[in-house]
Amino acid sequence: MKKLKVTLLASSVVLAAALLSACGSNQNSSTSTKKLKAGNFDVAYQNPDKAIKGGNLKIAYQSDSPMKAEWLAPLSDDATFGSMSSPGGGQDGLFFTNSSFKYINGGPANVSLDKDAKTATITLRKDLKWSDGSEVTAKDYEFSYELTANPAYGSDRWTDSLANIVGLSDYHAGKAKTISGITFPDGENGKVIKVQFKEMTPGMNQTGNGYFLETVAPYQYLKDVAPKDLASSPKSTTKPLVTGPFKPENVVAGESI
Image (cartoon, rainbow, N blue to C red; front, side, top):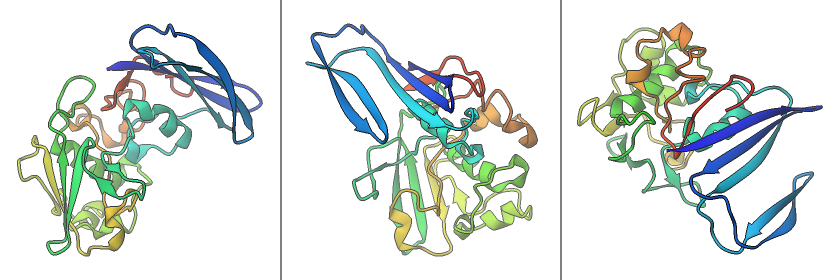
């Protein structure tokens, strides 16, 4: 994996400047400086005549407060940090979509909906791994539901739409220790997950529908952290595991990645 560097700069507002470093030389051939409008800002950039193998990409984010480091999507409530950390895959979605936001195959995972059976089958890519080299498993996908639905973790992502998953409301209310509507055809360490719904809706084939989750969480890495401590644990804030092409080398909460 490559390195991602993001730094917060203080001004009249807080500016988060992202520096994404790719491997290789950052030497270009001839370049030309161009300008464009981005919202209320003038942006100048150099566009090389041909593709380069390395270099730096700087992106600025405007925010009225420092970012809150939290790599687990079910526990994150900071939009700025979500954007800044996305190259690391901490909160990136599992599924690829087309221009109409409908799911397509080829991403970290594929999803298949069966209207008659009222199910969604999620298949993780065979070579999908965490940044420590361990496999991303079916249990890692299910664990995102535990983080979201178990009040002990303090997530604010619970919705009535998720209650459409069989057994999830009972788990949320503490009436069940497991989620009956989420099963593993190939076992917890496999790559396939089946989600059973009470009812199907037309919007389920588009990203962000809210009826099922689109992220994973590293169960083996986090399972021994007490739920009340997870949101502030180094394992979810400053020393996370991620799935994307970049991994964080050093994280200072509220200041820099």
